[in-house]
Amino acid sequence: MKRFAIVLILVLMAAGAQAQTVYDMRTDLIAEDTAVQVQNLVVTGFYSNGVFVSEAPYDAYRSIWVYMGSGLDEYPNPGDVISLEGIFKLYFGLYEIDTSGGTWQVTGNMELPAPNELTAADLADPALAAPYMCSLVHISEQLTFSSLASFGEWFATADDVALSEVMFDNFWFETPLEEDLGA
Image 1 (cartoon, rainbow, N blue to C red):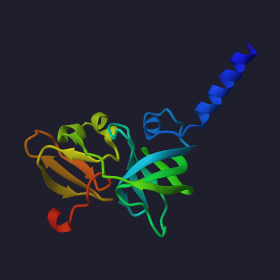
Image 2: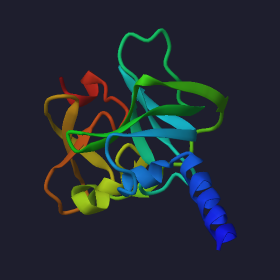
Image 3: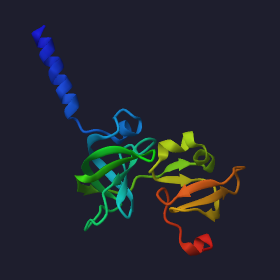
Image 4: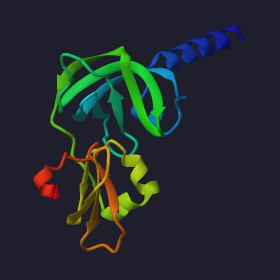
């Protein structure tokens, strides 16, 4: 019986020492405000105070925003592979890892993963769109810009899909040029 207890304790200790995954965070297997350690994340995009990262196999629930704080001398670039330590949080309902009090380091570089193929109808349905938050996506339909919103958000319609307007966020897509938006 003692042997079984010792083996069980060692197995539990080994499981606790493993690095967490973005998938576990995004599927609510890791509690909010938990210290996390994540490895082998590819940077897929950036904004003024952080980066978007994805983990293999780069599909649903495999991407997250990493808040790094402002005023850093340098941020990772798209294609950089990073490892990080931070706090897993929900920021206004959006998943993120806050490394402003933690650490991150570039451990390599790679080609960006292929984008996930989605339709405008997928993005119009919150249940279908949510798994791809912070992911690289390719939308198969031609989109037409319709209006600007605030905080980098904009609206478009799909020409060949009977949908109401779909809101896009510059966090998900390349920042449109003002002249492309009719501004």
